[in-house]
Length: 431
Image (cartoon, rainbow, N blue to C red; front, side, top):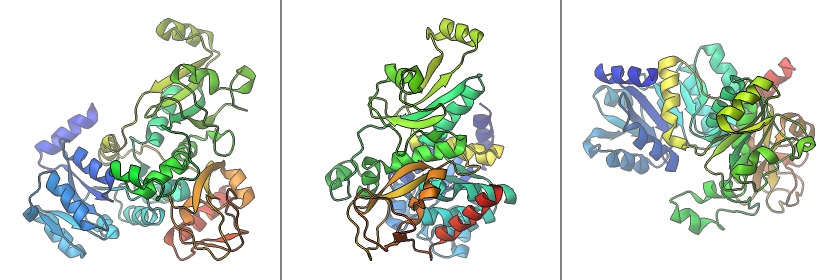
């Protein structure tokens, strides 16, 4: 593989790709350990608001305490890197300024932080690889536009569902198929009432932040992941929130097809998910009425068609992300980007919210995310999830209702709010 050869050469030249990681929770720490095992790539810096987490990660990777320097000033960071040390910092925005760091990976999951780091990386012409998909589904289109204009790299990472689904989409199209559905397995039914308190015990057993676990259980993460897939491919949710039926692998190509052919969809070209025994797999249901393709598929796979299942039984999250880093640095290529907004993830009240209530962030007890088409969300004046945190309810909102411009005001002081306004203007100019 060309990437592996290039990385081996970087190692032989004593010039590995020096990576910065922003956010050292479960995924960030895992990514660091993965990179630590890759020839020609190394972690040189980690930013986290709790520096001790980053220090512990470096120690577990084999660094001595003397090799690790905690810094808050740019010059101190540069001096440390130039002297061969690794650095830890609580300041995420310091990372894009460091010349010796060739690429940064954003893993905080906090939309405003992700937007700030991505913009800073673009302005410094440093590749930014986003595991923070929450930022991407809110302002990914404008960030992609800014990066291209600046000749920089902005991309969502491989390994998570958006990257793997985009790969399957391109493979299918390049084999002459029409993509009917891109989907993922969700390993449990959605619990719309999940809160950090209700899943605290499970989170502790999995060494997870309870808010992050709640965002998985309440469906927000699934909505975010498939919205990123939608925005990268143009496929749309068939209904708000998607269908999400419990379907096993053997029946996917019978259910995730159009109603006229016995399935559940109103049209072809959708994103969805299943709660059957599919996770951590992802899938594409594809279609061809070409007789020769049908003949070859029957000969090769035994499938009758015209609908076919392409199934990948895994996505490996942070373990696969180094491929995006290598592609960005060595090939100047992106994995997943949004040209425009096809889908939007918007806020639904998890509980009754009285006027004057300041709402918390993703995974809280206040709201969850639900996917709509961008057109539907715009018509309803729905609030995108990435600009909801710290906003204020202006009219009483009942459990299950949308947060909209008529009953909610975002925190307009946040950077991501400003960036979202730029994206709205960009999209309106194109329309």
